[in-house]
Length: 116
Image (tube, rainbow, N blue to C red):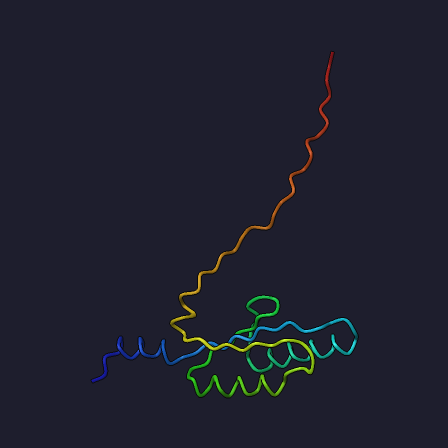
């Protein structure tokens, strides 16, 4: 009989997250089109936006991660910088995320009338 807790713990080390980081030029119309196409290809392959130019995808195994990495490599634009990183589900679970509040500019005090 397989210990389910042991299996799920091992699974956290087997399942992977693939993160794609990119900085693509957008100065010309063709560069913007290539950058949009790359983002669309990532979305079509099941990636989701983590931050503006960081996309991520969960993969059940290293073999599955390799398939999606290869698809990403085949969709690389000619210009720009792209990085691909894979981490285990256990490592991804240890990410500390902080969501700051949007800075609010205080309104100037309203003019107060003085009575003499």
